[in-house]
Image 1 (cartoon, rainbow, N blue to C red):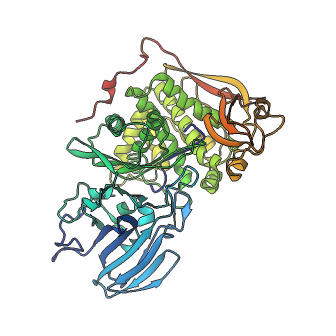
Image 2 (spheres, rainbow, N blue to C red):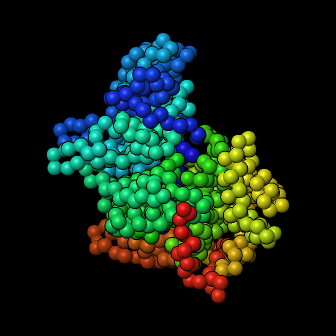
Length: 593
């Protein structure tokens, strides 16, 4: 899937083809006698003295039988278009290139002719990305480190997208840079390269769905599991140790492999910093086919990342190994399954493996149920999600919320008939890998669910996921260890306008005289220095802000963001009993061997 696997922008919340193994001595292309249907990628650093200024990309392939190849970038990814915007100095050797659409060229050459394309990619930033301006699709190339997704870095010869691919990092494993070293890590290292066999099949499509990271301060923690190389690559400094974070990553990976009963495969988790200033906290991630990328505020706590780790790794299976999913503008129509079901299983597996306690599990569900209850798009049809996903945050969150609730509802229905959603998902995994049966996830899932449980889920899906009628969690939706209740709470009222405040360079704006913030002492024109504590949407948790009135000393103001109205919503409460230990046995996360 070529978009963010999960995104949390919070106010203090937070294919089957074998890759070629052999290459010529330089790695520039196929060795004599090899098939020409191979695309070789080469990435290298561009330096100015000791400072990194750009990344150079070289692409080598043979012209196809038509004598014409369109080379270009994806039209959009993660809500961003013009993914080619940081391209500089494209050159073509072996053929003639003419502009086609924006971000694409037509290359003309005699069939079979070796073609070499080269260009550089410069940074989208002249500073370290911040919580305010960080975008997953924009490459970060700073003097001492870099971090980029394949969609913004690599052009693709479009008629070769199903060709085998090779990859080489031409800076060497370690490049000496004065007092430091520029280390490198990427899931592209799983592909074949000069003197390196592939550890998994790799196509040109996989080059797009990749992540690259490097820098003088890059640290890599590695573990071998089932003979596979698992790595955690980190740039930046955080409030937790590399080792502790990597250990948590390995635990999550182990728990989810156990759920599917599968052995480990080569995998990379790459993390880079987004600079925060205490006023907001940004954590986001993007699932790759054999990796995931994290953009993390250094002030984040390790526990803030647990659910995101679980969500992103579950994308290894959902949706890529459970059936096909659209690319392009209609892709969000499937997000109730690919994202909502992934949230459901991320939390469930974390609970079952002992990495979430009952309170952690209930907190994740209550945040979802609370935000769904107050969403202005709660009753919107799925077509509204598709249209507004990348321009409206409420539309972006909606398929996560109601998809997770649907998963719990369908699991409850299945359990009542002697089955479970777990059995359905595992059967879907098998069906998707069966020749002749694999199809779109939103078609395959209902068919498999009915086959396993004897129940037809289509009316429920049509009513709540497609038409958008509000959905409720059944009382036993989370099993006997959690009660689901309906409660009334005060309506959330922040009392000031965060968008106007942000636009005013974090000077408070939109403070209403009749609101709770004003009553607590907040005034327009105060400088917002930090949000110490907050949970947007929750009127029962205090907002704690550090502000500076003009000409006065800093102040800390705390208040309940409660309005005058009431909101009815569902609430999950742990219901411990003999069959519900406080911490489930860790043995449930044992890796399949």
